Length: 433
Image 1 (cartoon, rainbow, N blue to C red):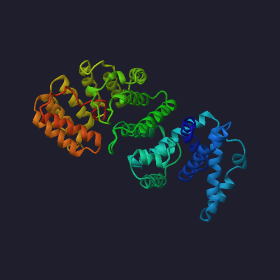
Image 2 (image 1 turned 135 degrees about the vertical axis):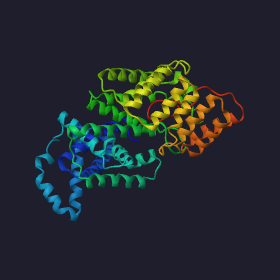
Image 3 (image 1 turned 90 degrees about the vertical axis):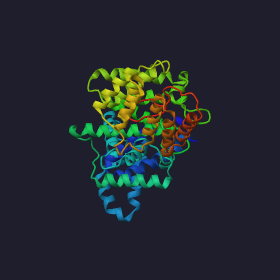
Image 4 (image 1 turned 30 degrees about the horizontal axis):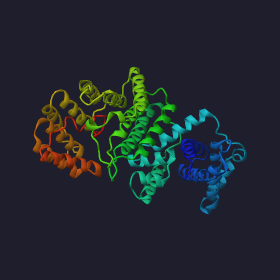
C-alpha cells in the first residue's frame, strides 16, 4: 500500500504536472494518459527510493518521456511526432524542468480545472474528468466511489476527453466575461462531488467519505488559487460545516441518524470553527452568493446546542434571501421546512404544494419525505406514514429507504412522534441529517 504522505503529494502535484504538459504539448487526452503513467511510476518508485529533490519536476520529466514514447510507438502518429519533436527545444526535454515558476502553477492549475468543467460536458462527465485530471484519482478509484464498473467509468472519462477535443476547447483561462460563469460550473462540480460523498444516491452505504474528503481538498486548493473569491470561501465553509456532522449521522449498524437525534458532542468542532470563520469573513464582502448563504444556514444549525435551541426564524430569513438569489425547487422545499417550524406545519405544506407541478420534484423521494415530516408535525399520522412509504419506494439509497420505512412503521404502530426529525436544511438539497 502506498504511503499516505506520498499519495497526498501525488494528488497535490497531479494537476500541476498535467497543466505543465498540456501547456507545453497540447493534446489533453494524450497528456492525461501520460500523467497517469507518471503518477503510477512515482507511486512504485518513491516509497522505495525516497522522494526526488524536485518531485514535480520528476513527474513532468517522466510524463514528457512517456508522452513522447507513446507518440513514437504509433506509426500513424509519426508525422505529428516529428512535428512535435522538432517544435520542442531539446533543452526543454533534457534539462531541468521549466515548471518551477509559482505563477505558472497558478495559471495552469486554474486553466486545467476550467477545462475539465467545460460547458460542452455533462455534469457526470465534468465530475469524472475533474476527479481524474485534477484530483489525481485513478479510474478504478472513481468507479468504486460512484459504484459503477471500472469499464463504465473508463468510457465516461474517454468520452469526456473526446468531447473536450470536439468542442475545440483551448487550454487557457476564459476571458473575463466568461470566467465568472465557468467558475460557477467549477463550484457546482465540486459541490456535487461533496454531496455524493455526504449522502450517496445509491448503494448500501449512507456516505462515501473519500468523495467528500476529495471535494474538500480540491476546494481548499481552489481557495488558495482564488483567495479573494467569496463564493469559493462560502463553498468551502459549507462543506466543512456540513461534513462536521458526519461522525454523528451514522449509527453503529450503518443506519441513518436524523439531525434531531444526533449526539452533537460528536460533531467536529474544529471543522465548525473553521467553517464559521470562513463564512463570517466572506459575508461582509458584499455580492452574497448562494454558497455563502447555504453556509450561513449550516452555521446556524451547527452553533445550536440542541435541536430545540435552533434559531429557525434566522434560518427562514436566510432561505428567503437564498430563494431570491438562487431560486430552485430544492430551496423552496427546504424553506417549507423552515416555515413549518416558524409558522406552522400547515403553512409549510401549503408552500410544499407549489412544487407538485414541477416535474423535477413531484416524484422525488425527498419531496415526499419532507411532506411526510410536515404531515407528522400536523398530527395526520396516517397520511404521514403513507408519504413515508411513497418516499421509501423512490429512494435509491438503501439506508435512506430503511430509515423512511422505519418512520412509516413507527407511525403505524402509534409511537410518539419525534419533533423535527427529518430536515436539516443545509442548502440546495434537503437531507435527513
